[in-house]
Amino acid sequence: MRSYRHPEDLRSMQELARRIWSPASHCHIGDLAWGRRQHLGREHEWPTALWEDDGEVIAWGWAQTADSLSLLVDPARPEAADEVLRWFHDTAGEGPLTISVLEHEEHLITALEHHGYTRDDTAPGYRYMRHDLTGLPDPVLPAGFTARPVHGPEDAPRRAAVHQEAWHPSRVTADSYRSVMDTWPYRSDLDWIVETPDGDFAASCLIWLDDHHRTGELEPVGTAPRHRRRGLARAVCLAALHALREAGAIQAIVYPLQGDPAHPGAYPLYESLGFVPYARTLTYVRGERVR
Image 1: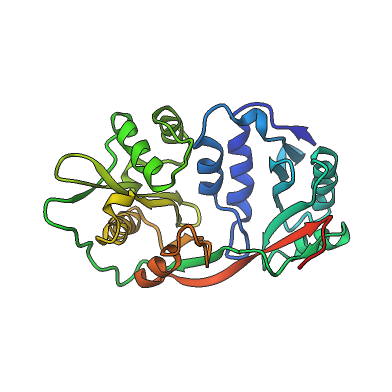
Image 2: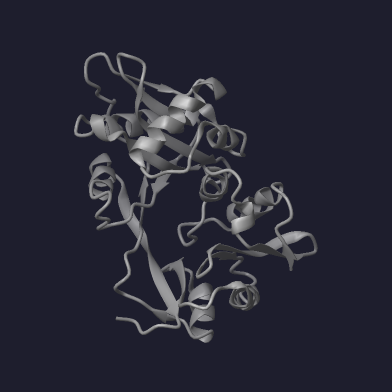
């Protein structure tokens, strides 16, 4: 085991995610790229450790808060989950601990139960959905609006601004978005926006392509509040999905939080686009009674 030492360790975490990715894994390489790069100056807030065997990462743990852990463990090395959980328990705060995994990650569920975690069926969960990229209609936009990919770092201020509006409150800035753009496997041709007639960005969809599995993840998608209910999220997603197919992908995935009161339209949007659910997350807690 070693602690996360420098930004290059992100690539090592991503390599594990790519090596073991399947519909039974909760983590795509895009999750890590966006999650760790969308904000600047937060590395010190996130205790993170990697477990290696003969130079190959077989597990990692990322304490995103004092009481919440994201972990990934090679299913071929299930014993490493015990090591990650013991590390987290030594790192975590005093309160109840929470960990979410995909329902198919049996090696993680076994380890969680062994360490005293109990499933909380009242907790909200993410629905994992996929689209085979067939039968995609063309995007339809209001008159004067256009959909296009991000041109490059010069678009970062407006690209960050539309994200800030869609996800208010948000700590994403122009500088942090440039950091996202510099992170593997970001591609500007898969980062799409809808531009208004006066040059503002009204909606956005970023897709991360794992070219090994030919699978793209939508993360994140958003529309500025003043431009909602005009079909812009649908249009920008369709434009990005067409670009994803042209880039050689065979499927797209996305993880809306079903029943999310803050973003009630997310699941219906993806369902209307032809995404179908294939898995869901389960939440496990230790240190409090499950309601």
